[in-house]
Image 1 (cartoon, each protein chain N blue to C red):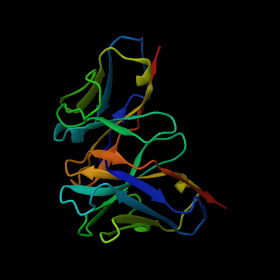
Image 2: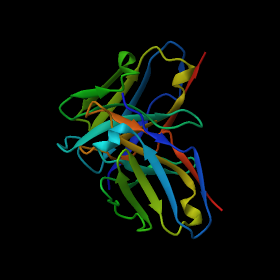
Image 3: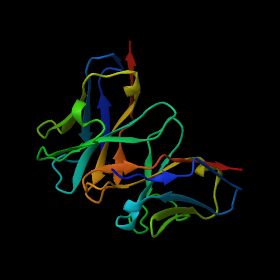
Length: 108
Length: 119
């Protein structure tokens, strides 16, 4: 099966821009999704596909992809964006799901 | 608004079977464009996909758990369920039921339920 690799921790100053990345060979063929998880809460989908935001997700969240890397960008990070972020995609079996290990985002 | 709710024992003895049910409300489990997932998260760790079921009963499992997992669907009750056999302490986790779109992204999650495996 495939793997998705994320940096364990990233920090950003309040109001600045931060990019969180997800690497994996499977991403050369499939888009990633991005999930935000705050302590004690279920994850929520914030970006999926090429660069789609579910209803209610602020437009400071955006996604992109290049080669084997998917990226989540937060433009003008807010204190409430401090959370764990997970990427996901299909595995080599098209009906199987894989998640990255997660990135803890700290807003300074 | 779609809602998912997990139910089942919060404590399971080692070597026994973990059983959970997810009740879906505000939408039909018989959707042709969705799968229904179980995903777990051990304390302090990341997300792990356990498996998926389609309304027709087709199932897909994480290869690392496949030998111990059964996921089934009951369209008459708008529910799907998880059974995990021969549990150990490593199976202690928050278990989420969720809706997966056919493009693999998970757009609705239950609140999660903590299942602790005791010796």
